[in-house]
Amino acid sequence: MNPLQRTLIEKAGNDNGFEYVVASEATGVTLASARHRSVALIGQESGAYQVQFRAATPILLPELLCSFPEAYGKSGVFALMTEAALATFLRRAASLSRALPSQAATDYQQAVAAELAVLPEGIIGTEVERLVRQRVGQNKFRDAMLDYWGSACAVTGIAIPEVLRASHAKPWAECESDAERLDVFNGFLLSANLDALFDRFLISFDEQGVLVLAPTLAEMDLLPLGITPGMKLRWINALHHSYLTPHRARLL
Image 1: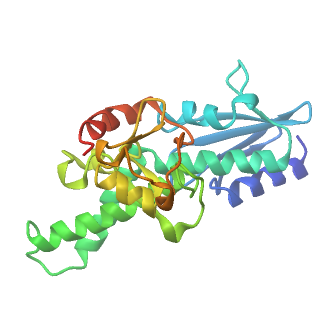
Image 2: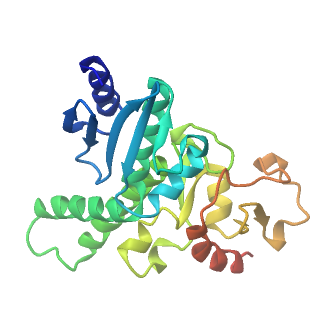
């Protein structure tokens, strides 16, 4: 690998969520980030960028395989044929690394600590602290959902951030831990109309991701609400199921 090739890889990393160059050698470039714990080792062979990805969490690799199945080889390396493909891969890998539960929970704890540190003494255990934690947590959950779903509705693909909502399947107040509240599999990024229905247990999704209607909506014309037959999630992970099963049981 020549210096120009290494420079192009370093720039792709810097522009797409891997801003730190851990090593840059003739055999390849190792990239990392301060915003997540995943590492990408990138070389070049037969005209393709060869990416060995060290995921921060085991559930990250299966998610990447959903997005780049044709690029993954038996050797555990992703082969990307162009600089644009490499940039797309790194951007998605960084987004997933920031979104998945452990990183979101870590970011949440750090943000809460920073906000509480500048407030007057004596607020620990008060309603003020609870509101701070809830506000910060909901913002971090939304950020994680935007990363996970590529800033587009999980059903329609609409990519207008102003109309997208981070919907919990297991409501915030009912979660038993911050890990549950911030788990990207505990809900979906939905357009405002779908969010309102999902939040009120009027729609849900089955194990294949197909939209399910509550009995009270079964005979109604839902086209004005943007609901059409056969609507489904763009993808679904098995980790969604533990949250969706009780959500479906509460359909009104």
